[in-house]
Length: 171
Image (tube, rainbow, N blue to C red; front, side, top):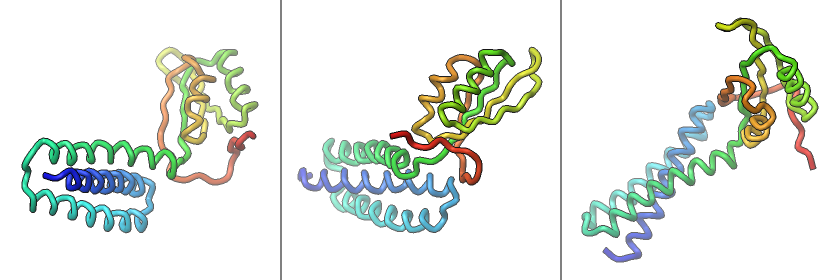
């Protein structure tokens, strides 16, 4: 196989797999029309790559590396696109003990501009405090640093948000 063919396969797989990753993320967020349009281009590019491979036959390691490498790079590119283009909001929830330190953390989060809702609950070892913090995905690290190891923390994607209090970008 010629090197140009390997580059074609790698590029086609890179595009179709990254589009596939992106399409799934669109579906999860309820963007059906955009997902359908993405699927059209994804499948067309896939057919070009597959047709080329089937027409030429698997003749060597370069072709295999190009096909598999395009698949791997496509996954990476698709996830990167999701972070950049669909930079959505996430819900960070913290379940921890009711302590002065935890209440100070709530105040620090609010001072930093993060809308923080506090709910009380009951756990195995007694009363618990539950923090619900909506933030942008790229703020998770900062929020996690503020929380430290003060409780059980988990995040989940948020499909859409409106109203409420959101952190403003600082210049």
